[in-house]
Length: 169
Image 1 (cartoon, one colour):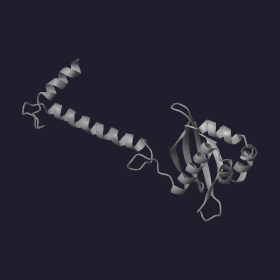
Image 2 (image 1 turned 180 degrees about the horizontal axis):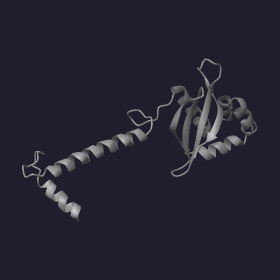
Image 3 (image 1 turned 60 degrees about the vertical axis):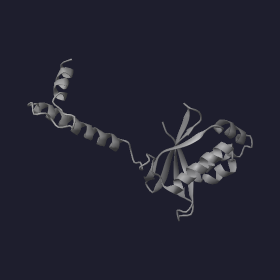
Image 4 (image 1 turned 90 degrees about the vertical axis):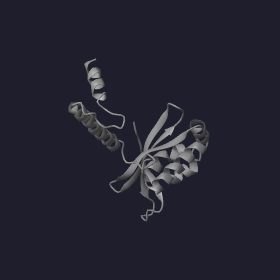
């Protein structure tokens, strides 16, 4: 109550063009300036906490890593076991080989990912490996979040494979 009375008395000192009336309300002017400064600081804090993003708010990830994530998602959605095996390498391929070689696993993938959509939520480079963090939304409220760890197949970096998958929370 006290604050609103003070605010009303401060606001009554403003003219329509934004200049203060000469009624001695210098405290109001200071309060107004301090409020604007706090607002500016808060905007910078929120912008800094929002992560690395481009002007459209999209997470910035290497195009080659995005292509692998999209191919991975497309293969899951279409039940393409052969493409999934081709995208995997090393221990990740060995770990998934038995399951992906079962013919009936294709139908399971098609049923599970039928209405799914892909969202890239992060990515970067760590210890020489590219990574891309994805959320596969199965429906409005259920998602599977994974980090795909990528490595060049041939050392040139022209083709990437998934060497590990980590579940994200």
